[in-house]
Image 1 (cartoon, rainbow, N blue to C red):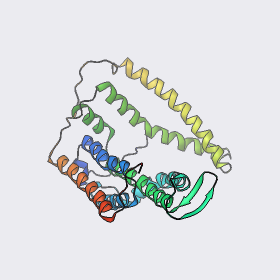
Image 2 (image 1 turned 30 degrees about the vertical axis):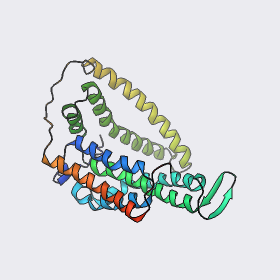
Image 3 (image 1 turned 45 degrees about the vertical axis):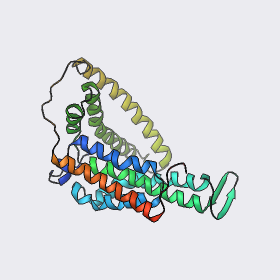
Image 4 (image 1 turned 45 degrees about the horizontal axis):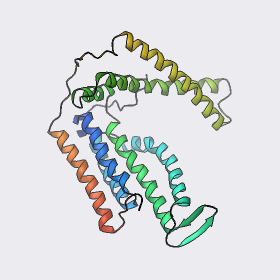
Length: 261
């Protein structure tokens, strides 16, 4: 199975942070950005997150590679904001319900940067997090039900299988001479096949787990202990400082804007 987690030696500072703390850090970094819609706060947060990349053990090239889907689809949200946001300032053009103005341009830029800034913490914090460690932390630290935790773990472990399935289908189609034309049609055709695979595999996996007693409500024990440490407090505190600095930069520059205003 192809692993989506970075398998290099776990020597980075962030590797010693509990996965539950990482989830809390994502919430700390994401929720304030969801409440604000300005390019300064999102841009500052993004810049500070990029400066923290060495602490995660993830190479900048890997970060950029995993940001490609976000960068590709982020303009969709930005364009909709550009055309249909509430007009303000100088109006540069109108067409039916679409209006391009100073405010819509500023909002579209803010949305574009914010989407990337929201995706960055997830990439940095979970690129090297093992799914089993995450399950241990969710069960022992967050005290979530074992049935839910084991379901999450099973789902996470099968993601790599879908990557392998996609690669195998691509090679098979190319071997039959079907992989060089109609990229859009090929994508949707393979996506449908992958969906069928997912449903079948999920049904078999659920049956197998139920047969092994994973669906019972008995209290379970865990082979590897998961606990919090001083490093977790430091990491969470750093996340709070980072988002406070980003919001303060927006307020001091006069660019801060709450969603809906």
